[in-house]
Length: 79
Ligand SMILES: [Zn+2]
Image (cartoon, rainbow, N blue to C red; front, side):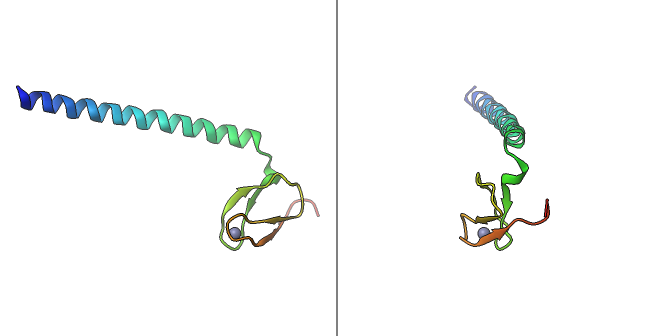
């Protein structure tokens, strides 16, 4: 009887873990979509030194990477 309860407990634990993972995944996917919609394409920067992707609210040609503090110049776009 104790063994059966133990197996049920493991089953319930796995079920809760899987549900938790699914809920977290859905929330993460929604956040990603929302970020895509809200953030403008021009304000997303990728550092060419450390390839770190960050968002800079300043709409300027130069931006400073928050990770390695190096200057990034806007590539492409309207010139
Ligand atoms: Zn960087």
